[in-house]
Image 1 (cartoon, rainbow, N blue to C red):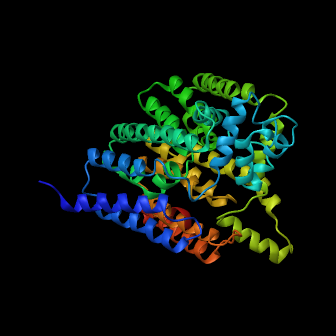
Image 2 (tube, rainbow, N blue to C red):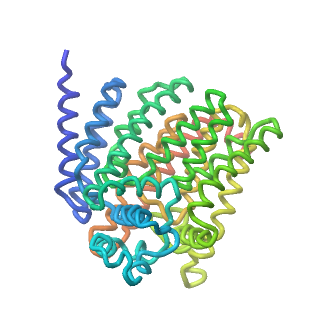
Image 3 (cartoon, one colour):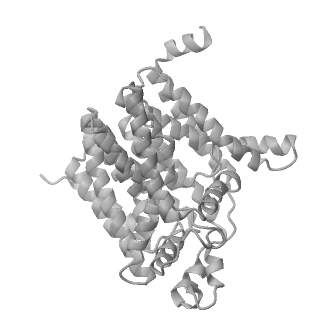
Length: 444
């Protein structure tokens, strides 16, 4: 029997994604918010009624609707295409900034497509060296290999991302099954409006990173631990963020095994990073990555509170001081989670990864909406659900773009983090057993 509610949901969502991708622009925040939260509400209403096949079919369909759309919420894709084309010109993308290349006589600056890309990308991208790791660069190159055309490159990137998303669906379902979770939980990744809009719509490559990462976790679950570190290294080569959570998988009882894994993993990273970047360009790459930790600000939580106090006490922005402390705080949190009870169990390992990433994001200075897709995926393999709520509320940060000048709405940011942290504390205490936790921590 045909379920009319599901058909209505399907047609409504197709329409909403179409209007989002082809009709409205980033500054039309009221309409964009209405469309996004409509997607989220409709997905929530049918979440318990969809089978795995329906989740797969709907998810692919919603992504295909956006296949020919120009990214409307982010202009990073201009830099992606630039880097891919630069590689095609046999130029190392880590060696020159786009503005430097435009000034070279008889070089890429004389070609129309480079001038068009340079004119459309942000100053942040124009004036800085590429921050994207080598595997990501290869994907950029692949999307520009057949034809030097912006529209064709967008379609090529989108095709690659959709393929990675379909792989994420099957890999995620396999991991859920092995961990004895309901496979239908994959819905909160595969049908999540944030994931569809930010990855397929806005062409961010977190999905590809999660394909490698998820495959590594799956191999680890199948007790192929050494083999698992090949795709795990590729995930770091796509997006650096996974490097802070992979150490949890190295924490094995046998010291000799740990040593072999460390040699293998860092050896792989050496080959992935050293040769494509080049020894002379490594400082440029490092300084560009460091820029994100010491000079940029967007959607911070704890950091914004510290910044406010800094202004009150010091009288100036203490961003550089806070940025230098963040790596040390992350290391302390990691070590405390590494020595957590039952840390040899895979469910505990995945939960520790999830908690470390969440806490890392809380102390970070820049949290764009697509950043949290990683913990949204990891959260599938835990008992936490607050990250699903965050995937809805973080979209409020696009209110910053309703004018030509980026201006964040601190009331909306405050609302975002009050809700997210509140739900996190509730779920954390509930899982730890509230009474036991209070007795242990506060001697009650």
